[in-house]
Each structure stands twice: as structure tokens, then as C-alpha cells.
Length: 169
Length: 319
View 1 (cartoon, each protein chain N blue to C red):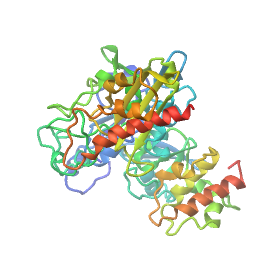
View 2 (view 1 turned 180 degrees about the vertical axis):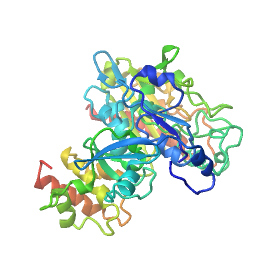
View 3 (view 1 turned 45 degrees about the horizontal axis):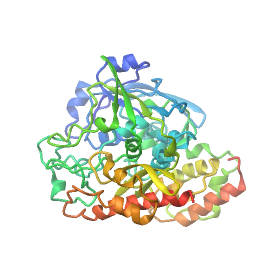
View 4 (view 1 turned 180 degrees about the horizontal axis):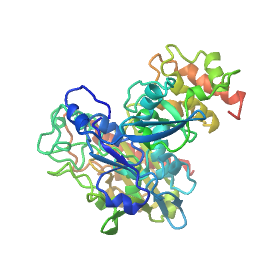
């Protein structure tokens, strides 16, 4: 276990807890590493694997900026312990191919569905699920992704465009 | 988050053999561990246990590890269950959170979630700042001088209306407990929230068959239209024949310390016409015995009106 220097943690660090072996399949590549059990999927992706598309907004499961797919379903990486992940992970980096953006990514560009962009990768991961599930109430489905720039009308327009463009995303 | 030991038992027996805190979806546990509200030494990831499946052959049986989104989407669940689940949290959280964990979720009282302030639920005997403090979101029913925190689950309200039971297993055996007895009023021990014994695990939620609950709904009133906890909610079912209510189920959330059944309102509805006036008459007793705090008195009228709206929506739908 890594040594931490915040007050109150030194004893735990000295006493130590067993780290766990973690195997994560992310965007088609399997990564194996050892980490403390408290490492979240979000921290594992960003700090261990340098996959920084998923963003740390609130780190409390409230903002949706860390949304990734596990087993094809959107979840919050900040409330998921990395060691408990059993199914393949897809982040925003796994959506596009070398040549082309994913239709939902293209729709976000076309509709100007962002300002600062911090929430965008999470928005897109939820939007992909919205299109795949053909949800009728886009605003309700996307309510777990906050946008402090308030690009909501354009985000909804992007989801609608992606849904029209390609039913097989 | 404090360091802890993590294991993933493969069988129920193994999970029960080692003391620890069970982790299913983690949406409550990991959140509260980050806040240092919960500091387990040992966490048992139970997601390998065979506690899945939704069986609708006679009533409804839901494996404790079924995710909220899967239960909500299942064609065989009563409308009030599905609607309560879909009104909960966000789609990401519903993909994560288990039905068993949902029933055990902790209150959203901000004092409970803040280790810098007293809370009788978190530190017994330390006091309750909510009683004199910021209490607009707090309970008016089932409260005590020790605690006024609401129970946060939506689906538990629907399950309470439907007389659901939870199946529990421990190292010493199995038992089944109705939700009516499962949840404990805070009284002098608000830290004890339910009937679970240390090391005991919810394996299944059992909902008795109630065919007329096909006409049921869940109405949730909140500060935001989506992704917010209830100010007040109502799970209602009506058995209507010839314009008359023959039977009814009514339970409410967001206003009480436990999922709250209103049998007096149900009794008043039996034999009543399905008119708004009759619904208002029946709902007039809903807040009897309520103890409003300094800033949540609005919940008394909101409670009555939420019930009326839910009943009205239910009868309008079928016309």
C-alpha cells in the first residue's frame, strides 16, 4: 500500500492492507496491475492507465462527468471500485475509430453541444446509451449528467441528431 | 477513504462465514466511505453470489442483486414498482444499484453525511442538529426527539404498499420479514434502522400477488423534475369496479422516517366513488399525528395533495 501523508492515515499505511490484483479490459485492451482496494475505477483509468477521457467532477456520484460503460451500460466510475469491475469497460476514447468520430461525437460537434467541454465525455457516454436504447424522454434520461455551462438544449439536439443519423450506434 | 480489506466470496456460505460489510452496487457504501461516514475494516464484494433473477409466476420474486434498471424494465413488475424505480436517481446509478442495497440505502440528511457535526444516527447520543437547524427536507411522520431523517428509497414505498417481504439469510439460517416489520422507527436508537442482524444478508424481495395492482402508480414531488430525492411521494393502487373503489393501497415517502403505509386512507377509500372530492376526503387524514419542524410544515398539505394527485392520475389513466 502506498504511503500517504495526510494526517490520520499514517497508521493505516504502516499497518498496511493487502493490495489487490486488478485486471481491467478497457477499450479492448486488458490491463493488469496491483492497487489498493479503495482505488476507484475513475482513478485507475486516469492515474494508472492514463485514460483521461472520464473526468473527475464531483467524485461523489452526483455530476456524471465520470460516466463510462461497464458491460455496455453507463455507470459512474467514481463510485465503482476498480477491483470490483468484472466486465469490459468502454470510455469515450473507445468510441471513435482512427478515421472517424462516433456518430454521437459528431452530433455533439454539429450541434455545438458543449462550451467548456469538461462534462462532455460523460455526456457522450450517456448519450450513446440513450441512442442505443431509443429513449423517448431524452432530458429525463440525461438528467444524471450535469453541465455547468448549461448546454442542455444543444445536448438534447445532439442526441436527437444521433438517433436520426444512425440507429445502429 | 480509509483503507480496508476487500474480498469477493463466491458462495453465500462463504459470504456469511466472514464478518464484513457487503458491497453490491456500492452507490451508497462507496459514497459514504468517501465521506468517512462509513469506515468498514473489511468489505465483501457479493456480486458473484447467485442472487439474481426476477420471477413473476406467482406474485413477484426479485433477487437481491438485480439492478434497479433491470427491475424497472421488467414487464412483469407492478407499475408502481417500475415508476418508483424510474423516478429514482439517474440512469447510471440505476444500472449500478441493487434492489437489496436500495432498501438499505442511508438517509440523505446532510447532518448524517457530514462527520464535522453531531448526528444521533451516525454517533449515538451526539445530538440532532436537524431538529432546530435546516430541516426543510426532513420527516414529519415517525420522528422522535433523536432523529427526523427521512428514508430515501422510492421503491421501498411501493414495496411497502404491496406488503412485500425480504428474505434474509445468516450463518444460523433463513427467515422472511415483512417490510412493515423490517424498518425500525428511530425512537431513541436511530442508528438501528432495520431488523437485519450483524452478518445477515438480504437474498430476495418477495411481493405477494395482487392482480388489481396492475392499476397502480407512483407520484414523486421534488425540487427538480428529475434526479432528486422526494419532498413527498405516493405509491397508490386502486381496485375500481363500477366507478367505486373496492380496495386501495397507499404508502408515502419523503415525509417519514421509514416507508410509510397509510391504512386509514386506504380504509376511507374503500367504498368511495373515484372522484377528486372523495380522494380529498380520504387523504384528509393522511397527515394526522404529523410533527412538523420549523421549515417543513408545507409537507402536511403536500402529503395530502400528492395522494390526491396520484389517485386522480390513476383513475384518469383508465378512462
